[in-house]
Length: 157
Image (cartoon, rainbow, N blue to C red; front, side, top):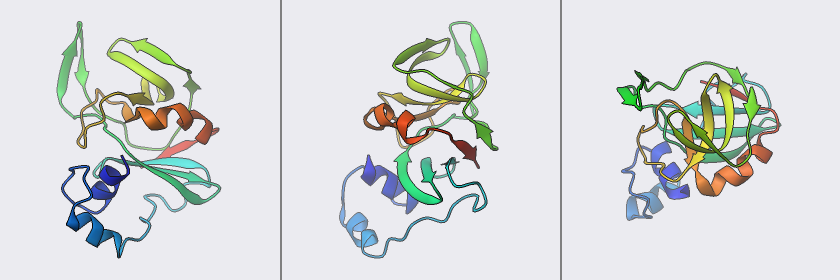
């Protein structure tokens, strides 16, 4: 998970393996600049282009996670159709659910809803490219703790 996030941030092939190009890039790696420097001390930023999530706590970058967001393509699933878009903007967490939840478009683990039915949530498959219906998928290994990491968050883009 960490190698994929590093590869995404540094424009390297997304293999998940610590290849020589990854180890070479580690030698000169720096923290990424925030997407929204004035976004507030505790917030989540989603970089749609690089498919990563930044968690800031008390003004400091605390976590970087690989994500998979909306594909931007049309979908139809069990009679529900739409465009798989992850919204841009700044949002507050509206509600959170612990454990698994069945939605119209699939199962979500520990979802934190930030606009309507769109959530940051754990999912067994977090490919290195956009693959969701619009939600922000995070790895299952992070989803358990993510709700406690984000007591009050704002999403910025």
